[in-house]
Length: 199
Image (cartoon, rainbow, N blue to C red; front, top):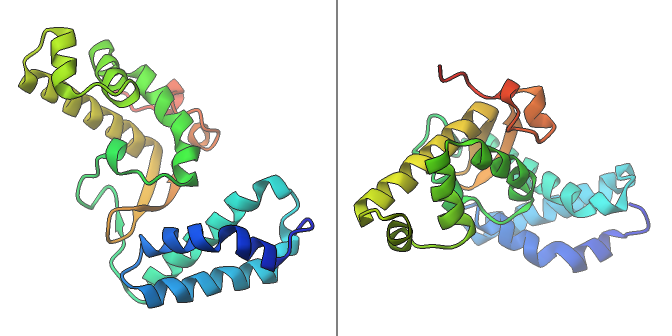
């Protein structure tokens, strides 16, 4: 593992990894068991990591895979974003490395939205305006501003669903995602070849 021992990995990652796992399972005992499994995998397969800069991403991928295996082996409910309850992707994405991977894609999709939708998301999600402040800025009623933001979020969600398949745990956290096409795998989801033809 490029000069990093399992003990060093434990010291650096066991607390955030436990928190990451605990948010995705129902009880402390399961989280502790999965954490031990993660570090067993790290110990067993550490020599397969050739680039130390990818250590954290590699460890979190092991963790996500073990959580997915847990849900499948225990027949715990795990749902697809497409068939599950609609997820507000802008508010409910957890702040882990999956989000870091998706952010360039999401940003490109926001920039590709129609002008009104793009403006609504940039002002609220990136610049921090409330929906009331958005309405005041654009001369809209509160309900009009709220409707515009909701419409823009829905369009963005549909773009993401066209690009990627998401697997969620029972609390709606993203466990994993799979790009649907080559342009998504290259993190260029704003590419026209990847987007649905809306007519």
